[in-house]
Length: 192
Image 1 (cartoon, rainbow, N blue to C red):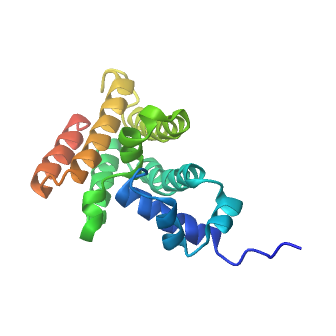
Image 2: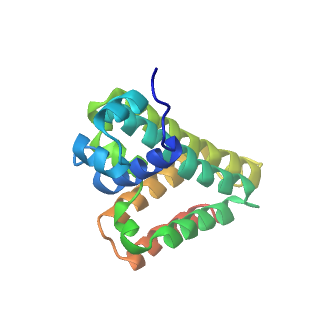
């Protein structure tokens, strides 16, 4: 008879999410996974599969948590300029300690893993599209007539690209002042 699992799956996924987010996929070995999770290889393989399967699950969890929160923030804001400003302010607040240099796990995955892994690319595209759709919906709600703001889909994609670029630049160590200019410019784009 198999022994029941004696670990919290969500806790393990959150720990691995942080490890992959900080270090990337390629710099985490199975020995690292064992050390981070306090599980032996057999338990890891039985519960999650291989390192790649664990990475995919951790990336999905990040998408649900972080992109889900971003979409909810955008949906609840009174208008698009407020939504964009609040989204960036949330990003600035999260830039504390060492996490400032981590950037966005989804963006990191897009650069490091997605070009060689179609499943990772699908996850990245899904969450980026979700963010872009939230911006588009916000724009359509804030500016219901086409004359107020032209090409709302293009602007939604521009806001998404700017936010993703902001997160990539945060990982490079760009100064807060420079990041603040990116966020200010994004708010200007949607201020009619």
